[in-house]
Length: 114
Length: 114
Image (tube, rainbow over all chains, first blue to last red; front, top):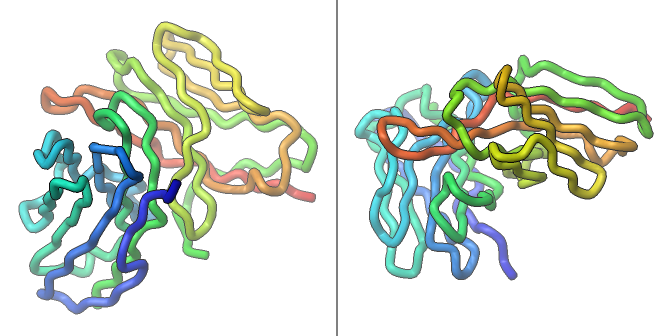
């Protein structure tokens, strides 16, 4: 079956703009988590959605937000972009709640902020 | 491919040798651990997991060892192959602000010399 699909794969934005990233989980998976990956900070947890509800949130400012739809697809949004938001944004899905089961990652959305 | 981490610790081994990648985790209350492999330009891929009621778990060519006394986790790869070259992350299931989340280590780069 198809894996986790993230779109777009690459995008370039300028400071102050906003961006929306999309994630389609593996069919049947109800949990979607988002991570930010940078060379300096590694993989950092953003948030987790399960059954359309945010279940957990990492230590990121309110500019980072997300949502999950009834078909389990998820989007994350970053408003008022800063240079430091340049990163690989990874989405992961799992059958059960993230911290109790195996995560399946997508290939990520590479965001560059100029 | 893109760089996952510019200053990751690196383990260099000869093809056919065994590799041991180590990870120190932070939370003594963590009860679930996972190893992930990330190849250049791709998202992390699940390798093997272990729960805290076990000391050792084996998969195909991989073994994970857990030492809860010193909060140490290791991944052993037998007969290392060039395709094993990647960045390896350990992750622990922790209670963070009252909610469970997976926390990832900073990663180790494995380079397999042919």
